Image (cartoon, rainbow, N blue to C red; front, side):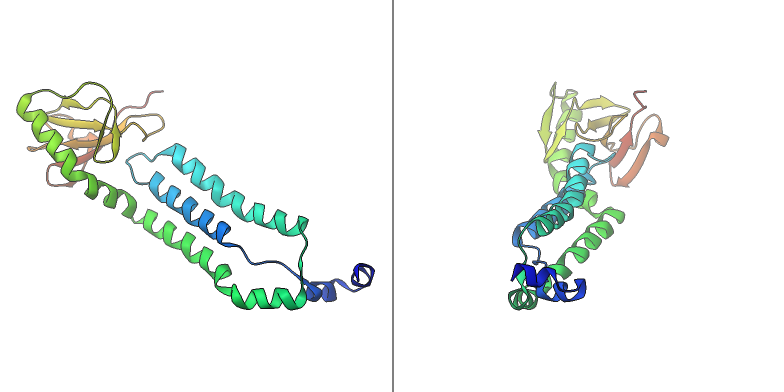
Length: 202
């Protein structure tokens, strides 16, 4: 059978053998990688470590699948045709998934959703800090964010996010009356909340 197949033309060999559909593992990997990319864009200044992992996975999963197909034994034509009919949706699932992730990121949805979920905890912390005139020293986890050294500044409370920014501190800030200084450094998010970016480290 092997010699007979090798003697056939490339077009015929493609009909005799067929690539396998992406398995559930590949689809799950694409889903997790897309989620990691969205999560990386969910903080001011972006979380570059998570973005790097998610982007690398999205690039490596198709490459690994192709290498596996080329190196492995392909299914006979009849079995491959049956697999194509059963798993046709798998080919169509990945592009909409990636397109949806790109659309959500371009509209800032991951960051808005994550901040909305964390806002009650951040507000409670900020109000307590302003009332007492003190903040807890050192890193803390507030509302799902890793905060490094919250501080009283410019008439409010600033929350530098430990995982965001590459060359500058970035995060959120709570100003009940608006920032007392450097208003150009803050972007108003609504109510007493702002996002901010510090000076570059370099």
